[in-house]
Length: 116
Image (tube, rainbow, N blue to C red; front, side, top):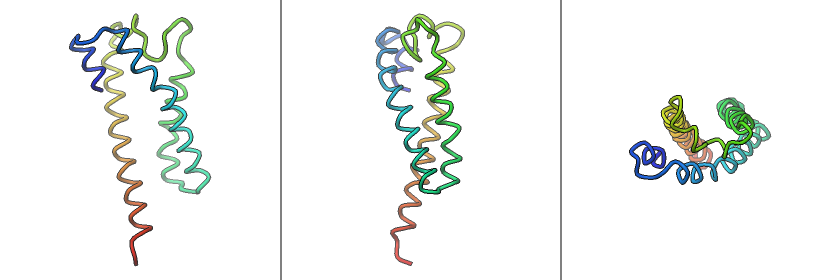
């Protein structure tokens, strides 16, 4: 979010912004896919169903990158057609999702450890 807002305010150029963001796309896809599979294997159905759409969206977004682009974030297209605003919106939604998941995982951990 900070990198995208820096690009929006023109503090950094589009190429450096996109290279910074693109290096985290593959670890994000792999990490989220692993967490989703682990929730399926451990039979946490609600958390699995909560993570499945986001993992699917991450994989879809990574697969659908047009050939010739630098990655999911492309410096030649990030200012076109409101992509910067849509990337900011997506980042805010993901931030909210990850905060929700963090507190759900924390609650599950504390409820299993706490004496009854």
